[in-house]
Amino acid sequence: MTSSTELAVVVLAAGQGTRMRSRIPKILHAVGGRPLVGHVLDTAASLDPSRIVVVVRHERDLVAETITELAPGVVIVDQDEVPGTGRAVEAALGALEGFAGDVLVLSGDVPLLESHTLAELVETHRSGGTAVTLLTARVDEPHGYGRVIRDEVAGVHRIVEQKDATADEAAVTEINVGVYVFRAAPLREHLARVGTANAQGEKYLTDVVALLREAELGVAASVTPDAAAALGVNDRIQLSEAGRTLNARTVQHWQREGVTVIDPATTWIDVTAVLAPDVTLLPNTHVRGATVIAAGATVGPDTSLVDCEVGEDATITRTDATLAVVGPGATVGPFAYLRANARVGVNGKVGTFVEVKNSSIGEGSKVPHLSYIGDTEIGRHVNLGAGAITANYDDITKHRTVIGDEVHSGSHNVFVAPVTIGDGAKTGAGAVIRKDVPAGALALSVAPQRNIEGWVEKNRPGTGAADVAARARGEQEARDGS
Ligand code: UD1
Ligand code: CA
Image (cartoon, rainbow, N blue to C red):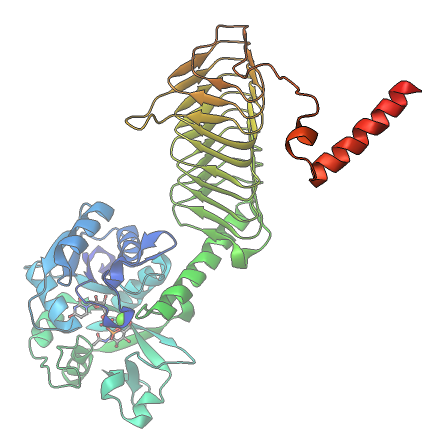
């Protein structure tokens, strides 16, 4: 019978987060590549509630817009100028008129709680039949949190905030996580009675607990075994701690799925990334955004991939890549820079100190050393010599370079776009290619070499160069003479 009770989730996201000292509202700071409130919204949605209401106020438009992007179906409600979590929940209840089920209250700044923890809390609440069931945690350092004050028979009496706590109360190590399941009707009734006579002059949601207790409506608390997941983010120190906790969880998830992570402490994987079995991540690797890595690929060390697609058995070493596609079997790096829409084909190679932007490098083609490739299409089995530069910008606009299949370029070429190199063509060392090269042609743009004998001795007499040149010439003449 109880399981047919409707569930509404209220997410509190109106606070400023003063302790972050940030221009950005606290709940929009990210861990694991997603805003704090995004994690909370995901967990909320996983419970499949009939409604999700998010309360906003600080930086209202920015917050509302982000939330709507993250979770299009939620109802956004504005809190008025009365501060406090109690007032925020009151605003939410305004949007839940006539709702008679259970209300799960979550804080937008407590991002790591897992769906099963919340589902269990709702279950405990329903089987206990109390007016409220709150989630608590036992921690070594309770400073800053509301303390759970229990009476002689261990029932929860009330919650006292840090700033209102006596020394004895502050010594309590059981904290209020900021997550509660309420029956809607008693919550509505007793929240209306909460005032703002406290150290912060705020309407505390936590004060409802004592009121429900006095009214003998039943207050229960469930201690979570996973205290680390229950901690809120109030400052930058806690932000990094939450990031680390989440990352450890994400890394372990992928390890269980068959990914080798050599050094979990320096490997950072966003919650949005997807990795296949037998991927190997070497130390200090960041797999961010919507990056997808296929089986057998090796990434790192010292590599950052943002929104990239990496094919099977590809190898990426000491590389920075954003919005790039690396084909199966391709190798990238060390020290490569792949920018938006860089595409490396099957078994292709982008080598050392090579930057690629908005270009495709065909199957088996190589750009091994010291090159800039921008707005370029390179065919199959091409080899560009060291120092290839595509000059894509003529000071007004960008132009494309098109290089056919099986093209080999000499070292230190400049391709002045727009320019097309035909299939099988070759270019000489140092060439500046300003005109199209027909298929199969050899393009030379550097004047034939002329050696002016004795130039150094004549024009730079007395220098070291002239001295050694004179000696070498003497030795050569002696050899020629003998
Ligand atoms: C709150 C709890 C505290 C608990 C802690 C757990 C209260 C009074 N205290 O304290 O017992 O240990 O969370 O993390 O509830 N918010 C609003 N409107 C407001 C104020 C806050 O929506 O007027 C939102 C914030 O955006 C945030 C959440 O409520 O997401 C918690 O607010 P915060 O100011 O961080 O409360 P704490 O002091 O951490
Ligand atoms: Ca908080």
